[in-house]
Amino acid sequence: MKEIFVFGSNLAGIHGAGAAKVAYKKHGARWGMGVGHYGCSYAIPTKDQSIKSISLEDIEAFVAAFILYAAAHPEWDFTVTRIGCGLAGYKDEEIAPMFVNATGNVMFDEAWKPILGDDYIYWGTF
Image (cartoon, rainbow, N blue to C red; front, side):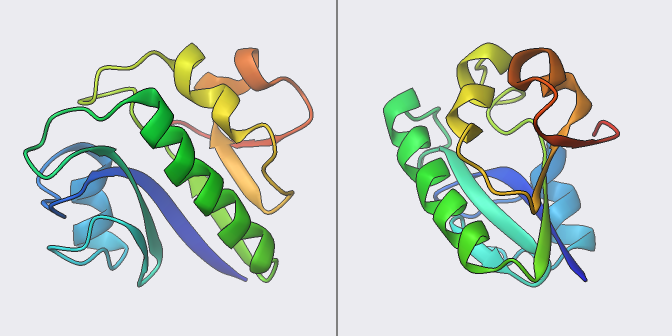
């Protein structure tokens, strides 16, 4: 089964730090591409073209699109990092609930277990 690394990005596709840098160096994220599936990675924007944090509402729309994409690809496993909770400056409690409709092929950082509960699969921590 193919594993897809899901990370927080910026709309400029500058993958210079944090999980975005890991996605670029190890999982096939493409420089200049800040949204969607490339290689074995999936970019969910949490920052804009100017590398400023976008609104929670905008992040939620990108998360909803990701959830639909993951549902359409049950043959892949998606490992979601704590998107938006590092450089974008949001709290886990603000971001994690956006993923409550995720399908069974989506796994989350253990840090989100107290928020999302036991109904999901968790992987280590990034």
